[in-house]
Amino acid sequence: QRGAWRRRCAKSCRPDGGSSTRLWSGSPTTPSRTSGGSSACMCQAETPAETVTINQQSVMATNGRSARNGSGLGDSHSNGHSNGKSGSMAESLTAGNLYHMALEAKPVLGDWFSIADTATRLGLAILAFYRHLLMQPLALLRFAHSWNLQWYGWKGVLLTLYLPILPFALMAAELIKRAGEYLPGAEPDWKMKGPGRVFFQRPDSFVASILWDFYLAVSVFSGSFLQYGDDKMALVHTLYDEICVKEYWYTLLDAAQARRPRQLATWDGRAAHDVGCGVASGGCNLVAKISDSYLGIGDKILKRGKAAGGDFDDLDDVQRLLEADPQYAGKQAVLCEFVSPSKAVTVSSEGFSNVHSLDIVTTRTKSGVKVLTVLLWTDCSDWSSHSCEAGYLIDVHSETIVAPTAWYSPYFAKQNSKLLGVRLPGVREACAKAVAAHEASELPWLTTVGWDAMITDDGVYFFEGNVAAYRTPRRIFLTPSITRAFFEEFRGEGSPVPS
Image (cartoon, rainbow, N blue to C red; front, top):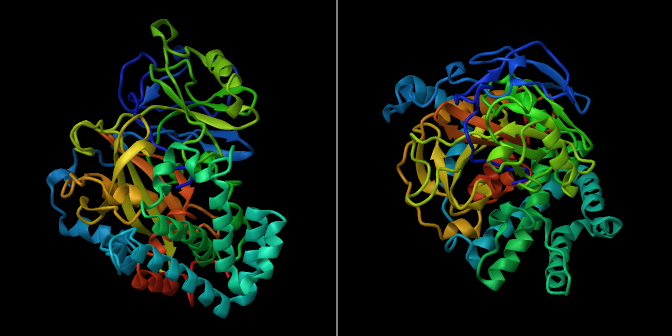
């Protein structure tokens, strides 16, 4: 779930304050510290890409696509039925057996997150490790050495010496970490620091919770090697997004002509810079996100209109706000407009706002990039879907909610599933955009990507992508048949995984 982030917000705005989904159209420019007034630009429904340079990367600042650049929510997808053409398109988008098995997964033993289930998943992750050790011993040794140094420092060298029994060494390390949680002044685990902690909550049973901790440690190790081989840059991205920061995902989304919120500024660690129309244009609130952050850590809402009690009117105000926040000191960040969730489509249970997120995982397969799963995170208690209280599986073919995500984390195994059967028009188009964006990446190791998006009244808007190092193992080790299918896809002739 690293970097996963969603937002509820006002619609993208014109400089005159009117609301509609719009783009900045103008001449190419580099970000400027000078606040441009609204008279300096006009917002238009369709636009060519505007290229700016951020962090030594060429980033497309097209920012947010119009509903005319693809079907919105009022198109033929909204009739509640899949015609032959759209059904065939959806089938070609999805990852065949892998997709269907993940969509229909049932626990092999007991209920999800029971002792039997957590033991089964842990067992599959351990078996995967020993298959790696048997079939690719040298590559696994290189991977384990780099992994252990990255995660455990000099102590990792000792772990690598125990390669034949490494899963059990990792479990011992988890026991030590678990014991350390009860010490005075103990720091919380990174997974529990941000608002996305619901995705890592432990089972209620003490034994199952220990097995779950073991499973998370071993499954991410085994699953990462399965996804990335011993590629060093891929391994770095299991801990830190060195290349795949927010701006990188924007380049891929723009290449796919996907809609995304309009970016109005950047922060270089010391100074704010206008992008496109600039901060002073429009009438929308902004959200600031640290480029290399994850799980919503550092996300900051900036309310427009100081006269009405808000935080800012122009770029100088944004400069002052970010300068005063220690989380932003020396860190690059992006500032984009809020985008509202759809009011026309039911995406939340009664009593909740429509804040939600589509979680689209795409994977490279022997047949090209395909959709592995589409999840809906919803029933949120605040502006971010990290506060969600429900999760669902969506069938791409019918664009329908078909099951709860009871297997994802213990938090969702106990949810009230009130949205089963609800149709979400626009999901197929969003999946096509996600596949196209993944295909645009030239990183050979980027086997899986998790895309975060939201349904609006103008279509689906994407916020970012994430290296799916943590999302994908939740699927890989669900059942023995799914684990076997992943090995068939990620190993052997034609495998998308670098060798």
